[in-house]
Length: 248
Image (tube, rainbow, N blue to C red; front, side, top):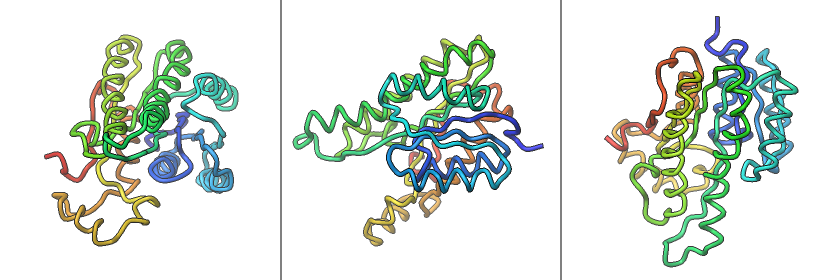
């Protein structure tokens, strides 16, 4: 039996990067996957077909997680299509990096809205259904930057640190109802975005990591599978760093 057999999993920001990696690994472990995308419909359709080919139910939904009403509507649609939401993986996020001196109010607010408000919106949306079924696993993707800060990322750090505090509070509120809330804090993960960076810079980052390599989306996905599965049934309110030892 596969670890996520018959579990229905909703992933925000699932059409590329880390989200896409999570969707593929979750499907390989038998989980049915509902995932959101913002604008890249072609990429989303391709991924949906790829996941279905693994023998699971899969569907892409165009939805903006930072919009409260859209998040509520999304949860309703997913439950209608899949029957339930057993696992929520809040992965949607953006960066708008700049030194605080030069950071605009809009750049701060936009990052908080998409990275942090989205976590509130979707968690709120799945809350009643999970309470009713008396089980659920909520996994929020933060960052090592949320744990240690980073120059030029005050907005991103604030949003990712906020996710950790939010998740701990949810764990305390919902533990008695068998709903778990945990955080994954990825370090330097190599995705489509990092491919555009200068190779020398990337190599410098790799050498600063104890494991001497950047992480892959699959590394984050494997941690998600563990926290989504019954193997972690006694784990809640925790932050798991997937960073190659960066914060050691």
